[in-house]
Amino acid sequence: MPQATALQRAPALRPGDRVRLVAPASPFDRKRFERGMDVIRRLGLVPVCDRAEFAENGFLAGDDESRARRLRQAFLEEDTRAVWAIRGGYGTARLFSHLDLAELRRRPKMLIGFSDLTALLNQLCASGGFAVVHGPVITQLPDVPAPALRWLKRLLFDPTPPGPVPLGKLKPLVPGGVNGFLAGGNLSILASLCGTPYFPELSGAILCLEDTGEAAYRLDRCFLQLRQAGALDRVFGVILGRLDGCTPDTGRWSARATLERAVQALGVPAVSGASFGHFCRNVALPLGAMARLDAGRGELWLLEGAVL
Image (cartoon, rainbow, N blue to C red; front, side):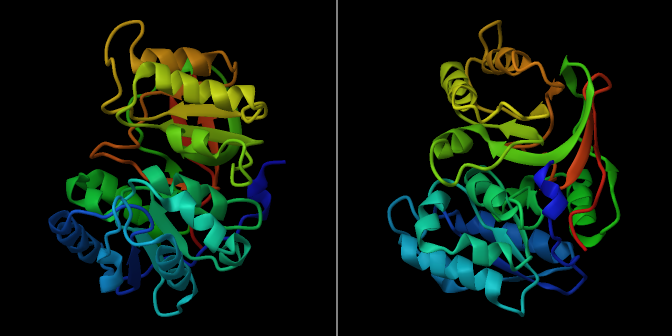
């Protein structure tokens, strides 16, 4: 059975709720951060961020222990209602040896982020955990168009099943319909977790994949690694999202065409061209939530809400 049967929900957000902003991976651009906080305020929320999040330690926003400590506190504190990643980059998985992930799973609190946050998102929505949102980080929010922001707010504030996901025009790769829980995120991050204790359980999943700045052969290598490891053996469906900056971008051996062929070889219902990932219209997806993919019609429907 899909793991979503044991899934919890974080409380729905309400106007005026305080939201903790965290940097579990790389440092971030201060101007984009300030503009992103303005977007949070326009959503009716109150952003809360400590100066410690501005730390820089090479390509990391502080050393591993301090980032893990800040992240744990963000989930355990009672005066904020959600945790929102400021930026991805690199470094989230480095925190796992400093965290009690089971402890965090027992504390349902909405987490929003994507890219490098793929590692943590899939840990928290594992069996016994709670639904999380694969969606824009704070520094991406200034570029997100109004319709995608309205959809994101709908997921965070409204517990009712939201129905069709506005992913744009989807290209059918393998026709068919399937129900499953949403999982995945950044393909490179998932591949880097393969063979570790932190690779997510994908049995029964509708696997959502995106990436950025990768060559076609590297995307093929990442997908092949997952397939040869048996990680995709019981995936129910696949949705390919944005591949911005992946090269080449045209032709039979383009990044997208290469990955589409690899996905088609799985033989499960699959679509391509969904508007989520490293792109201004990063449509939010509630990982862990049950959904229905109709690949022939190019539609994804959420069967349950992301929050209580």
